[in-house]
Length: 254
Image (cartoon, rainbow, N blue to C red; front, side, top):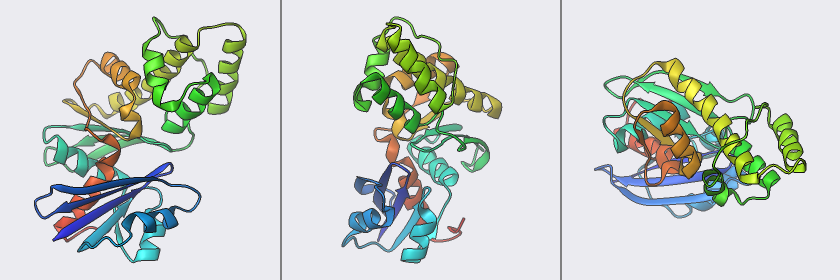
């Protein structure tokens, strides 16, 4: 039997297919675009699976169109992270639209969580906008920031005001890499604040597309002084969790 999980995010869509043993058989990714359901249909195509569960911000649309079960991103990332790292007690997920810190119980269930979903600050979208403002490709943004000897302090966390502040710093001749490092540090301060409010000890699993950013990885370890575990493909964690839940065959509606 095959089971699938699809994570319809604000920036990308991830699909994971597993077998009964929980082994990943297939993983696919596509840009969300302006019509996420059309992109989701392309991804699942002629896929044959016994059950599919959706998560992410577009899960409710998927539920209506495909009569599928859904699960919240919080639960999906908790399940996926624990499957990858059984000893983990905290999950930090930074995606394109929001960021979440999740504390887990010993049995892997969600204990409590903190979430930033009211503005772009502290998310992948924030970093994407700032990279463009500085003239960097988003794929190289983290490496450029790491190359700086120091980071300039960014006062504003509002995306609009931060973009204006960055433009002013550039106009005054400040080093672009130092500005980039300061922007990364501002995101880390917000993420670390969420984690610290959870008061959850132990290892942290860093998930979501932003977890691939090397500067974010380095600064998070420095800021918290704790082990940070990063999946090989951190953006697939939510889809994996949804697929694993599909394999459980009960209690999936969230």
